Image (cartoon, rainbow, N blue to C red; front, side):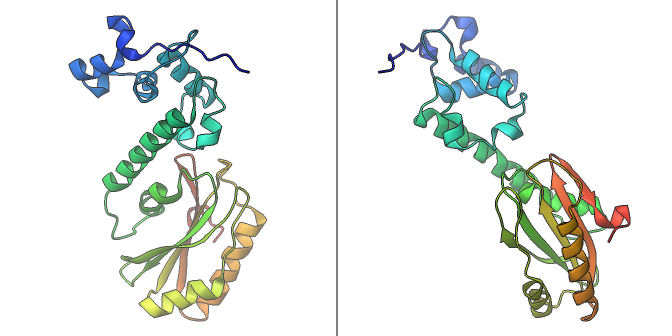
Length: 232
């Protein structure tokens, strides 16, 4: 049976090591990422403070909060000293941060470049641990009239229904379409399947006088634009 480790709540730490008090006195911006996570954790163990535990967790993801936000509750619980309650607190806090970024994103209503499309779509799919395929529908002024998730897959891919894409475009009167999906692996290199589905959609939409304006692959705060690369 695993020995139950004594813990040291933050209230019992030395004054210089109390992130809660530091936040109250100096503001949240004064705290390091590890100190903020330590507040969520609340206590460490006999051999490790909450800040030290937080540093260890952060180090496992390259000190990248976006990568930390991709860890599931079960993955967080693999760290010694993190039970379900602490794992849930970390996951919930990072999800609140992600949703805050989504609300803070400027409302893109007109697409004038691939970067505009990236800014519109990254908060939706840029940091997901699984692949999703989205469609952005535009009118003849390149204003966004609708955006929707077409399909959702696992780690390796997703399925695209060409008929559904064009049916939706006709129903809402869209004349332009931007395709987008994310690569959870982090690579921006388009696969053979990515290129194939783009060409199939382009051929089908051309017959209906609907233009495929771009196809974006999003990963790790970066993107690849088929239009910019001349491979559309």
